[in-house]
Length: 313
Image 1 (tube, rainbow, N blue to C red):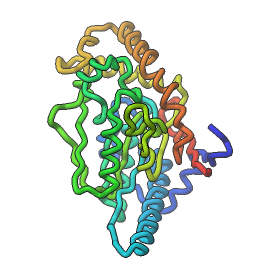
Image 2 (cartoon, helix red, strand yellow):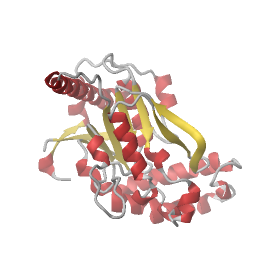
Image 3 (cartoon, helix red, strand yellow):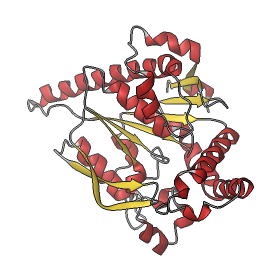
Image 4 (cartoon, rainbow, N blue to C red):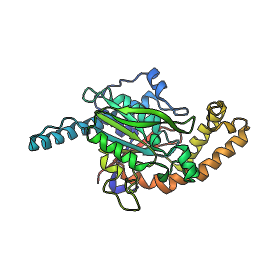
């Protein structure tokens, strides 16, 4: 990461920027928001998330003021526009927990109580299509997403459509659920979380032609969750082994065939999936987008955020 592009804060330095932002989250609420093997604490919420939510609140206010200038100039008030925050990072780095906690904190600011969270999982091609396109070993890579649909969703949200629907993805079924939808209704803030959301190549173009719009055109702010690749791999294996003992035991799980593996076999299977799919996707597609983010949050081996880098240029 280019040192001149970012100003980097230690966790202690960043925590001072919280100012008087109140901690509105309880331990019980945080427990409900944590992922299977995430270890985020209330102390980390106070040190990292609260200064970040304060910064984002200031950005939302500034964006509204700027929109108001344009509306006044045109003499045609359009009303509030949805502020879109993108969250990117590897599988197993903790994006889902981070996004849920951030959504909860931001929804408790009085200026923007309507905060929605949408993940890009709903824009994956259905399992049948991935199999037909021979993309099962590339699931999670950019080509496994219906990018045109993703671009249209963001365009509709930004245009202020009363309702916009997103397909629902089931991690247990490993597939899009037929005829089930998440409905987004003009939120003040939309958090859009996914592996490859910061890729410049993710566009709605067809036939090899460059598109006139790409995903990042719709983002007002972007965040990248970072960690050493060796740590992310360890977290992925830890989660895989946990799921193998729990969710994979259910007959409805796509990975039910892993249920009887002994610990060493399960570890070998998880490591193979990491090496052939998730680790490869991280190196080829996800990590190269890190410097496109407005903020990079760097985690240590214990999963806690150690540094915050704020882009200056």
